Length: 121
Image 1 (cartoon, rainbow, N blue to C red):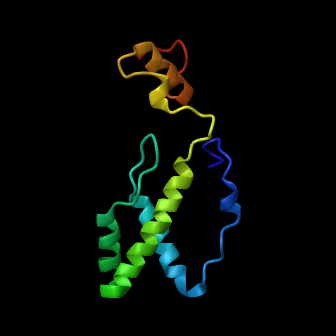
Image 2 (cartoon, rainbow, N blue to C red):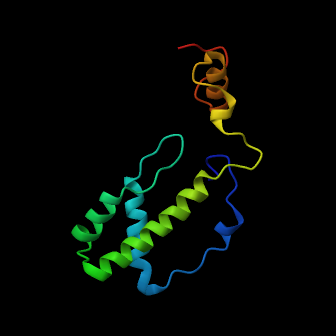
């Protein structure tokens, strides 16, 4: 988050300890994180990749599979929510310019650092 110019929320620093018997699940969550789509915001881990990893890589089935999938999805929902949270005073990009407003779109893009003022492509 620091690389993105944002301070981590307070709950980030109050993270719980991972119980030793659940470290494998935490490792699975981070490994699966490499499968998420990135765009204007970070996306969730695709369900198909979770199933593929838990069945294929870890060979989990039945209740063990369901429990692991539920934990990974809940951790992912919290993680995505934390990363995509906007500052309260930060307006939505969609409120700053309509797609048909060329100058407004340029302004938004400059704010995002995608183009520099005065540079046209």
